[in-house]
Image 1 (cartoon, rainbow, N blue to C red):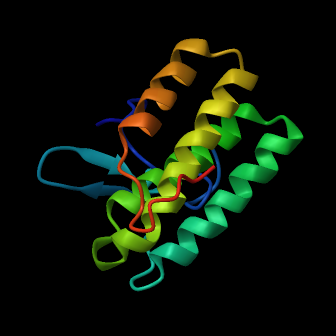
Image 2 (tube, rainbow, N blue to C red):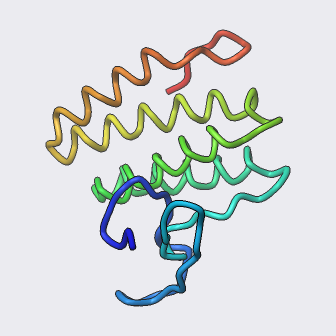
Image 3 (cartoon, one colour):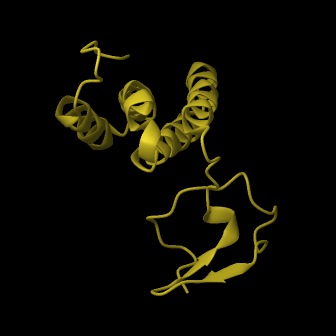
Length: 132
């Protein structure tokens, strides 16, 4: 199984406890359910905005790791937004900027540079305004 490995999104929404969660069999690997992030069909922009507000609160309280994790969830939700991709584009850019700020606060400078590069490389929303 892939119990300690990265690449997943989630945490905080599944079952509690260190060993909690059931396993979901996929084509390639087994994933712990607490690492999954359910997407609300038709409400991905709302879900992104809620996680973005949680990331901002974590950033203001100095919880750098939590801010980065919540902002990364927004990036992942926006990547799978489907029809709402245009609406989530500015939220995605704001989440990348918040991730970079949280990485700076947590003294993870290489990660901050990586997020900043991702922000520069991400396309501007349809309105052409830069977020963050």
